[in-house]
Image (tube, rainbow, N blue to C red; front, side, top):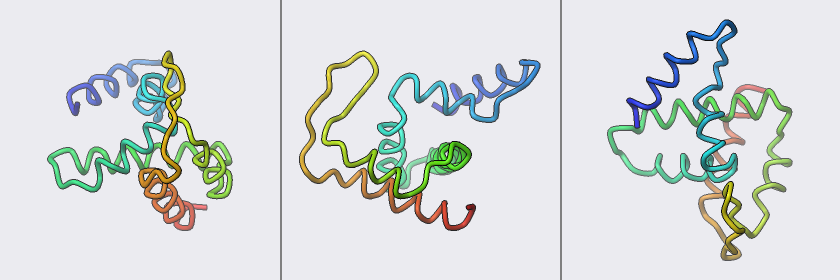
Length: 116
């Protein structure tokens, strides 16, 4: 995974106007914005070798949300949907409580307070 991130980052630097969000944009195309955030949140609960990389990617995603004007209240509304929506896949119903959503919201609230 870290090799792929390195590749996308280097490729992006070749552009005339590099986009600091290039890696996040590519991951969001594959997994969807909110599902990617939930994946980051779940992955950060482990102490695997990619924890620092995932933490950096989550911070980059949150920075993009902040730049797009997404407040914690707006995020909470988006996370309240009870279906999993992935690009190219039919919606998948979720249980009433998805603890990954709670982790995303709590992490974003902390980020928002520190950076808004």
